[in-house]
Length: 161
Length: 413
Image 1 (cartoon, rainbow over the protein chains, first blue to last red):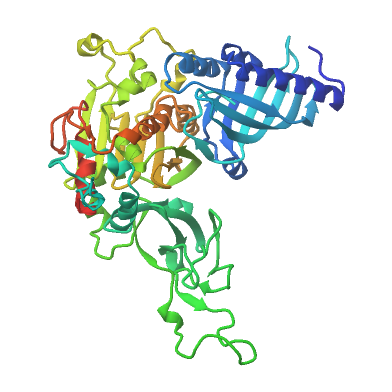
Image 2 (cartoon, rainbow over the protein chains, first blue to last red):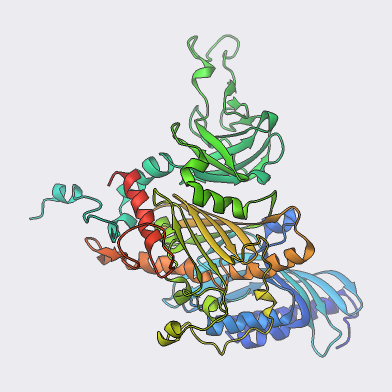
């Protein structure tokens, strides 16, 4: 896939990628979630407080796509949690840098969690700090840092963000 | 007609022994108030901070003793002080930030100011304005201060107590538990990250879960599948004399067990494999082969070693049916890159998204939500007998009984 020729083209492409990404999670088609990442991608969920202070350990850490596949397998096979679903609302995209086929972008998100009994809570808000690789057949995240605004997580965080 | 006054005088702990825990202890407002007075503000050592969180003169951190807000601060000559986070004047919080550095502690409400030991040093308009108003002549600043905590540091951990007659932390823990605290705190530490997990259940349900090795390989399928923890591994439970502190530990032995397979546990799906098994790499950093050590200090501190994932968990009550677990991931100042990589990878196993801990965030709420019909009934805590001593097996609830032994003593029930 060709690198976006300017920030506007990059913004359109990344917004489309994020829309597909959020839809994949919200529709519970998590088996397709790792494909949004390059094979050596970094994926982290951390908090604004730790991110600002440069503290390295957060809530989820993966330094390759196989770890993401393992997480989906664990969620499907091993881990016990009540049935729940997310609804991502993702903001407009800010393009922060372009280096050839690599684009850096940020977007805000809000996730509402719906439990099986119908109760809903605003689960988390935060921002994605993304690097997207346009060199392959489809744009993929080579890095995705999910920075939560709050360090408090209600009960558990099973489904990825 | 039922006489309500008789009901309210019913004993909080009706059965003798430690194997029957009344459900009302998780749901009665009076119990919560008594816990604050007799456990947290009573004869206990409460976790406040790691020394490395407040390294410099004037560094402070706000935290809680139970649900009581407190401040811990580094003062002159490296001494650490602690006091209630409540102005002696009209009771406002004197520190609003999570952490910071200050030369003095000044209340924003009326600018009463305290030194780093909590002593009142100045009162705004103490002499009034142009001779009018102000404090009466008999007012003495030295009669008013931030209510102090007794502070003691042990193995790099800052403990605080509102009681003045506590034994030293080391004596309080007893030799076995103290040695196991030192084991995971042998040298200068650094904080690697914080997470707070909000639980919709009473704090004691989380502490019981921590002290319950029986559930670990049953509820946590991930654990069992990868042979990280099995009840038939070498290991055991240490319980101190008071019952309140415990250590559960094990070593990995990759052998199958007929007992286990015969039980046909749901958790025994051996077809499940990791595409990136680097998560399960382990370095024997303490040199004793122990890959899992869960240690608790009564009432609400947990020190966790799961392979190379090291975490301090502070369990804070936030009302009868709400608890916050503050996870402080740590490593050592001299960690090499490879060890840091292991700590990163293994952090996936713990915390609110942890492969082997996420269930613990929910299971307490499963009990809490089932409480409405439970008044007058009790739990059954009989695995491994009816006592609360150290045992060589992990198929036991001995340390859960230990918790209640210490609890009953301090609560006077």
